[in-house]
Image 1 (cartoon, chains in turn yellow, brown):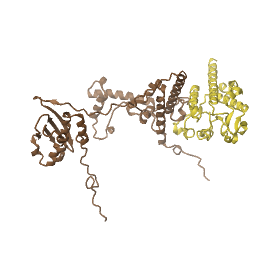
Image 2: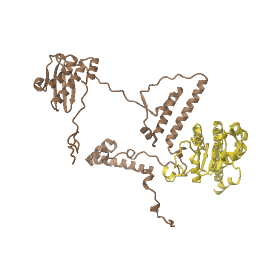
Image 3: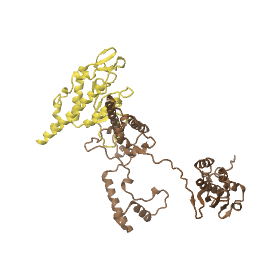
Image 4: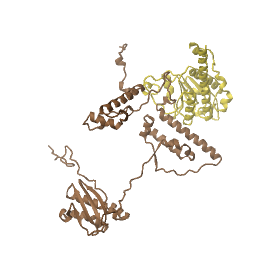
Length: 216
Length: 350
């Protein structure tokens, strides 16, 4: 059992997430497009490549590194049978995100976030609830263009976060930010596809390792 | 400064009431059902009936016989019902042994409502795709106007019962708007089965008052009956087709029964309104009430009986004249702290 859990931690890319995406895929899905210069958040300046005609362009090399780290982390969490919660407050993609979560066998929350969901869980759900072990934000803003309450709550409850941060978002409290576009349908579909493949790969790998263990 | 180091379990225990209503486990409910069935058979043996054919009604009668209670509230009396009616349907624990919840929208709080919205939205998207395909080939079907009066949507309470979850007014409105949008689309008929789950048939229309046809007695004379009430007086009247205008009440002629002119005017008003004063014979029985009340009751009874002799237009005229309305005014009760129904005691300044 110990070997099962400690073996993947030895490799830098045990699940080989690098082959899931390439720079061309990101460019074709228009991930590099940010908002206008006026909407820029101060803490996003390191991730921005430049500005063309007032529109910010996100540095895709940095995005590649961050995306690889984030996908690797989600795969490890899924391998260790953690609960993953997809959060997004964009009405356009709410259905897509919920379907992705359902296909992975994980959970989604694309509706109004009630204040005490994470911090007051024992009273809202009942004693003995298990909280999510990872939150994935496909859009870290809520409908009023402020940071989602779940980022702060997850930080309070020591839950790691992975999030797609656009040029107007605050990447501060997110453990694995992914600078990239969160408004285009193509970009969001790409992210959903990548997360889904990573999680399914990790779960299949886990089942394989358990089968090997039983055979011995 | 002092710092609290040691606490007892009593101090750390949170508010007991905050955990919500008691949740019943499946094993507990199963045991209750077994006990109920055993008890039913015992009761049948006690009453001398056959245990196999002992229905719920028999149980109720037996309990009412064995445990008579004078309480007014029916639900406070002793009762013996199937546990599924007594213990409200609740949701059992939502997660498995490893802690992972069963439903993928569990962490939203209102999982059944949001999964319903998700499903309905999926159906909407499918219908839109289908529509786009058809419109690309110009094959859109024409929408016929559906009958709106025949069905209604489920009410908020019925939806809450269906989902076993509390809903807010906004949530309910949103759901109904989604359903209406789905129904309004040209290809919405594809999902009719799904929509029918959330709509109910409105029962039959307003009951139309049936006017009874004329009856004929042994000599071939046409007659019809009518009943009327006013305050506490009840009256039944039989109006004969041919006649000279004789009017008998309880076997006594109206001149002797109703001495006051006002009462006799009331009795003759229906005939005078229709212009048939001397043409009908009437025999009536009346009981209860006072002088005026009895007169009003007989007036209503005769008007109802005359409906069978008269065209529909004239019935409508009678209704508009107020001849066919039962007067709802009754004596108002006296309240404590007051002299009468409305009169208060004399106000004294000191």
